[in-house]
Image (cartoon, rainbow, N blue to C red; front, side, top):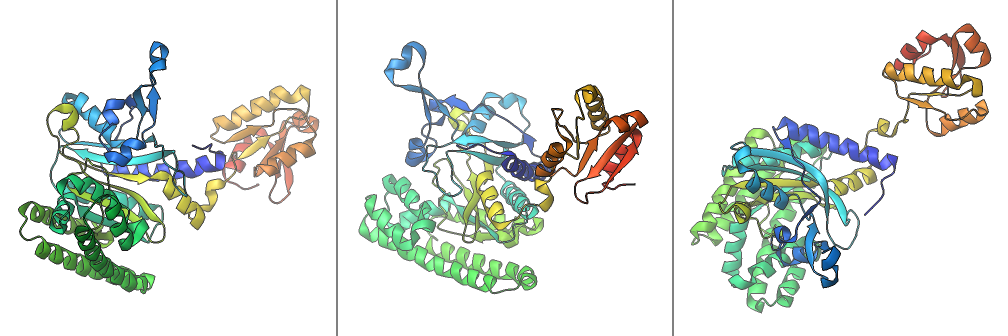
Length: 461
């Protein structure tokens, strides 16, 4: 949990502004929910590991001595959304498209780009089972990162029914499925050998663990070949060839999965949905970013269909999501189809800062001009001048004390303020204002009415 200094806030506001602009172009509406939820609303929705990371709030007042919790800090934005939809179902449109940008809290171990309090930037569509929803969400997330000048990201795509079918084929019992998904979800960090070790630690039989490792080693090789081909291309060639390479890899993976899981009709339906998403993203331009990844697990237990994650080479995940058709039903008693995606604001900002991706003018001066105070007798006139310039649409800082002009100039320079205005005795007598350009050091006098146009145009007449 961190403090944000002005420079940090500017970066955050810039990224949030881009995200909002893209989300709203896709027809999403804003939503906000409380930081605190009833603890029963959150528990049991995120799997065993998620339950352990929920910040619980102890009962208060006369119940404090019990040491029991009845409230909890929001863990994500999806479960609160499901509660809202169940509560306000009659007031919402048939297809409810919302975006939500708010902080969430997790009792996790802090690391690079990982914090206990962090913002999520969610988009969700409720009310439709169509794969058009997944295609739209992939396009929106892709467009956000493109607008922020990311060029090396991939949208990894998988399906929970396909994962379930694979686990069954490998010989992993149903009661070990959740444990296996957690192990597979860590594959990017632990490697394929790490998956085998993790599965064994979680009580999965050795033969089933070996089959699981062997499968992911095989698919990893296919994806590595894809990365090698794409990584060897120049930027111009990449745009022309990456789509073809990606289609070949996705086609090969789908064919392999259809063959390996041909006896399972439920899994075949999941594979058909994956194929449909890929075909639909060709129409909205995000297909070159989509890559089938049979090892993508996303450990949250409420996912029921397609799952997605945006990854950057050498960095890791910048966000993810998927379909969760049963979650609203836990609150409403009636299932409502839903699919969503969440971008991790903190990780995005960390990467953009390290790579120097923010616009150069983002850290500009906090004001266009600073008005000095010559002496105690001139305070009212300095305040009035600042007021007039603000009314003209300028950002104006007013030095708060009568001080040596040299000190006021030094202060303005330290804050990067370009223009400094001086209302000395001579200037006030002539109805003028002295204006100094801190960049060039040039100084001249202007009529009061000339000041705003000069500063607004960033030039001296």
